Amino acid sequence: MGDRVRWGVLATGGIAATFTADVQGLPDAEVVAVASRTEASARAFADRHGIARAYGSWAELVADDTVDVVYVATPHSAHHAAASLALKAGKHVLCEKAFTLNSREAKELVALARERGLFLMEAMWTYLNPVVRRLTELVRDGAIGEIRTVQADFGFAGDVAPGHRLRDPALGGGALLDLGVYPVSFAHLLLGEPDRIQADALLSPEGVDLNTGMLLGWDSGATALLSCSIVGHHPTAATVIGTRGRIDLPRDFFHPDHFVLRRAGAEPETITSGPGPQGLSGMQYEAVEVARAVRAGEVESALVPLEGSLAVMRTLDAVRDRIGVRYPADL
Image: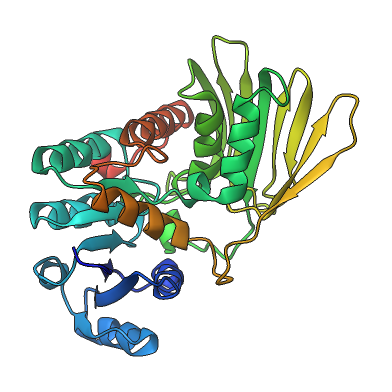
């Protein structure tokens, strides 16, 4: 890898476009190739974003010798196949969340990356957001005492008609893996893997979750009250409640620009930080962390550790077990 990290983008949806724009705003990175299942889609994406090479297959992208890191931006139902292909071709990988469809697939990806000595990271941009990093520092320094409760939700009421990918079990449909991964990951960031898991959900006729509530418990006495939905408008907010205060993330907790620290006996403090000097979306922090780690010869990030991604997938599996959601890939 030279002075500039050369990215290959695998898939051409909205999240791929956002990531590409953010990477192109970095001084030491560039997107050199993009792939889709059709050359026409890849070429249209490449033309929009000024990318030199467009491929009509994933195999062509991972065979490109100029690509240092592959960003997997497919729906999560294809994460295992796409990331495996890239790792087997000797490429470092940044893979969107939810990491995979289930913990078995996640374990296989992690084992493959470790076997090949390649970098692998889940694209959980929340963990790399400067505001969230500051929040975790304050919590770990005891700013609000011991955590007693984490509350977080993510939901919208969209046009999710039968036939939509969010209604298809084969594609990992439902609210949990698309949206619920954020509140679950937020709780894991602060408290680690839970000791007890309860959940209930409204299921679609196809058998995916439309509206899910979760109660996670830790032996410390902490709890997390989490919810996700594709049939109801949620505030998409989070609160961390401690024995000496609380922290409120009043909106977009998964990529916030501020939070409010409320400590007993003190005036509320609003702590802010923008997405960066370029005014980008916030996904650039993922690319920066990948570049830092790869240049340092690291095969995973301490900020988004693979064991943490595996733990989140175990929790998501347990929630699906409680609510009765099964995917064909589970068999």
